Length: 83
Picture: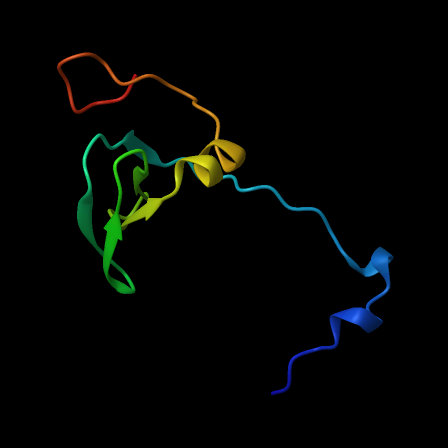
């Protein structure tokens, strides 16, 4: 199957989407390593470690995270739980 030529797409063919799943995330203060669905990935201090609804984890650079996500709920102090 060949890739479509995006240059020939009419702008009215495009739809606008927003991510609707919530995730857990933690701003990391040290470099870290995490097992992801794609294999082992490296994160740096200042990156976020994210966790999806199925327990999958991945690192994401802070500037990308902050442009993509907004906080919904603060974690309770001294707890792993949210809310």
